[in-house]
Each structure stands twice: as structure tokens, then as C-alpha cells.
Amino acid sequence: MKWSIILFLSGLFFSSSKLYAGDHSENLRDSIIQFAQKQIGISYQYGGSSPKGFDCSGFVHYVFNRFNIPTPRTSGGYKNEGIETALKSCRKGDVILFTGTDSNVKTIGHVGIILENKDGEINFIHSSSSKKHYGVTVTRYNNSGYVKRFIKVINILT
Figure 1: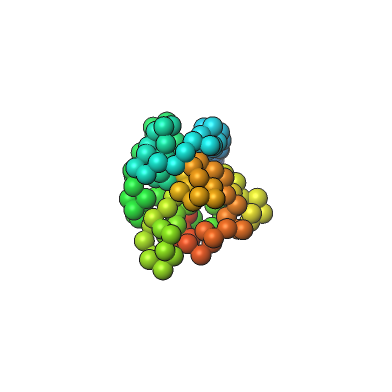
Figure 2 (figure 1 turned 90 degrees about the vertical axis):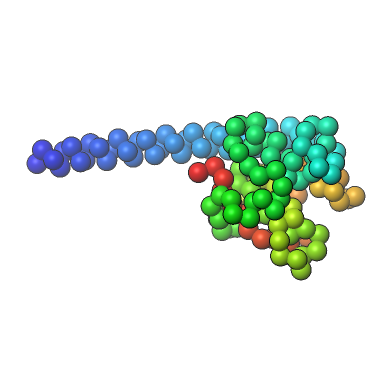
């Protein structure tokens, strides 16, 4: 009987710790998204990783670095990073990975940060070199050319 009470109480302690960690994670995800959105409109710059101008991986690196979260500096560096997450289960703050402009070359060539996944409608923020959406912008994944370039989503916050 005494051991079952101790086990029960320790289970409550660990459950509440996990709950707190989850709350912390959501607050961190919100902060990352808010900071990323403050960069909207900054121009694209090849090799750029500062508010003077960003390339895609420079933007993601800059945002996560603000929160002391290490990330690769190049899009190709994400190949073995994080925990892969199903697209339908992605969450704000996850990193979305795409091929470069040639979708037939199945290597990572573009990265962004998930802003939201609302009933399967996914918005992400990234620095785009496209003349149509130049610089840091928000793109609705479902209605974009990025669908055919999709590689995977990763969670780097766990």
C-alpha cells in the first residue's frame, strides 16, 4: 500500500512536470512566431543572415538564434536535424523543408517556419527570392507551388 501511494504521487509529479514543459513549449513557439513576423518585408539577400537581408536559411537561423536554439546556417544542413513530423500534424515553430526551385532534385534547397496549421490549411514564413513575393513573406502552403517541392517538416524544439 505504501509503495502504491508513492508511485501514484510520483506519477502526479511527473505528469504536472510534463504539463509545465508543454506550456513552456507553447510559449516559446508563440514567441518564435511573433519574432519571425516582425521580419516581414525585409528583402531577400543571397547569403544574408541579418535584418539587412535574408536568404531562406539565414532567416530561419536568425529567428531561432534569437532564442538560443542552434540551427544549421544552410538549407542543406537540415537533412538530419530535428524530429520528422507529419505535415498534417505540423505545429507553429516547426521547420518546413523543400527542394530548391527544381523539384526534380530531391535535396533540401529551401526552408521556412510553420506559422499555423488550421484544419490542414498551413501558413509558413520564409525569405523568398521569387520576384512575386520577394523577401520575408507568408505563404499559404496549400495554394502554392511549394506543394510539389515539399520534402518534410521537422520539430527542432523538443
